[in-house]
Length: 276
Image 1 (cartoon, rainbow, N blue to C red):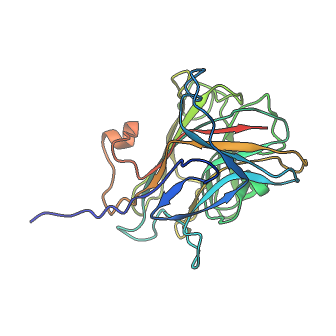
Image 2: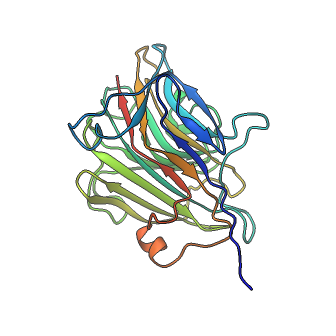
């Protein structure tokens, strides 16, 4: 006798022209004007295929994507699970900034919110976990590891002292970051690893069991930037692909839990960049 694991992957990848990517297995809500920059040899980021979103010039306008089931009935793409064998996911995201203006917002990760998370301060949104910053955060500072349950926020500056990592995640237009979040089925804790791909430094590496999205919340993928309350254009770009695959009741253990091996990603978001 043998077991069969059903893998229902949903994917997103860049397209061309003004098309906001190609989605298979889910739908997306795109905000902003879309284009596709020409590849260049300048650095790791510019050599990568990507889709660029430019927001409108009004206050709280955003550029980027929300991914899930965005047509009726609206639904998220993954959850922690509230009973044995239910839920579970593995998220991988790679992103960077193309510019770093003051008063900006950004967020890459998961949230129960199905509207644009950067139309408000990302850290104010319940049932959210990911990497980002608010419009009130200094643009000379660092990215934050943001997580919030139904009411309580934990916002950790990735300044080299967080978790078991020794490196920092400065807000600049150069460094590229990897965010990995794993949840076993019916998980009471999540495994989180954040890397600075440019420097090779581990910024965060550990388990978190508090301030998590509730175990009954279905979560959407957010990859966005916004201008905050100031009326100025802002833009974001997303590279390579996004895919989601539920864990299908197979827990991840061993090297996956320790090192977050990317041989079986359930959700993959490749580099994201922002500019004014």
